[in-house]
Amino acid sequence: MEKTKTKISRSWGTTFGFLIGALVLFVLSILLFMTIVEGPVTIGVALIPGVAGVVLLFMAFGGSGRTSCPMCNKSLNGLSTKANDGVLCTGCHNYLEGQGGLLWQTDEDRVADEALFTSPLPEQFIFPRGCSVCGGKEVGLEQIRMSSQNASSAITAPTVGVTTRTIVSVEVPHCAQHKGGAQLSGTPSNAHIKFRSYRYLRAFCQANGTVPG
Image (cartoon, rainbow, N blue to C red; front, side, top):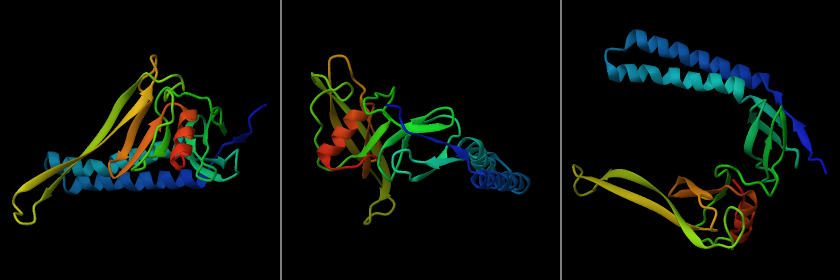
């Protein structure tokens, strides 16, 4: 059965909005170069609006597409007008992808080349049985982790710097052929886990009462 597909069109309002924003930032960068630049630090400050303007310029031509979700008809914005991958609909929580200006539901059996399908990581969670890539017999656990480092000052001694580090570490099941099926993202206080396998993401969400995203 052929998948339901929706056609992506360019939002000219969004395109012009990005272009105007980019122009304003470029002008601001030029003005800063003319008024404050005296050394490496001030050059860096003056470059910041220009770099942001380049980002908006790319968004104007590469991220101004819009369409409706082929599954629930929710309006989707910020899309490429050509190819998209890993697009999450916040209405029905399905992942979407597409090429040639079209968008369709990601096949539930898809295994991406990199960890793409995301779920919040609860404080207490379980992994579904089986390899996180292919669902086959698990033979081991692969540890993945992330950390954040924050510098603060002690209340009783303001001049003494105190560095703290928070680490999130999980062990992901894998089979004899597959490792690298997941990775962590976000921050330790707001951690997410991303899987290569869309089916495994769905199983993780069902087992832990989370929703993709």
